[in-house]
Image 1 (cartoon, rainbow over the protein chains, first blue to last red):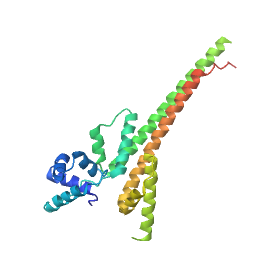
Image 2: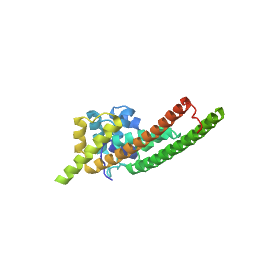
Image 3: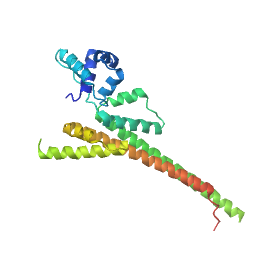
Image 4: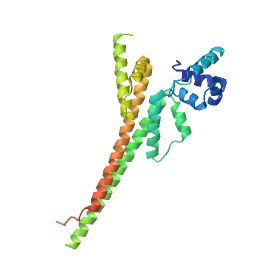
Length: 151
Length: 87
């Protein structure tokens, strides 16, 4: 699999070396939150951190680690945000851990889960529409009967 | 890079820019557009696919919101409406 971004390389490096984001951040002189943002493609690495990581990466013995999946970046983040909102509407809120896992999932996984959520939203909207229509019919009939009696 | 690839990348960048403008409510700046053009075609295809899906999901949510809002409107109208005389 092809390594595409510095964030992918960091993730792969941490995986191979068994480091947490916090530990890698300490090695590179940046915060854990920055490592998280760089890995998900939401932030550019500061030049010093990039240089420090390149040195670590070069010192890793061959074979170089490869990432589990290329980062889906900003597009993936936007989709996961919408998926979380959709899950909320469906009454099954997404936990932060789930959102984190989804954000690092391959694009195919995100796409297939999103399609299922769209279907679920469509079904829910149809149900609400039908329930609304039934309610109006009953109320109209009741109103007509009431008016008939008063005449 | 051949002409077809350049054209294809340009089309994908346009699609990505439009999708992001719709989803985020603001247009991409020149710098972001230029950095997108530097990405390889496979990365652009993946971003475009994900954003297309995000747009469809957002539209589905908007449809659901519209349905809910119109049900609420009808419900309110029914409450205020005078009883219909029996024919």
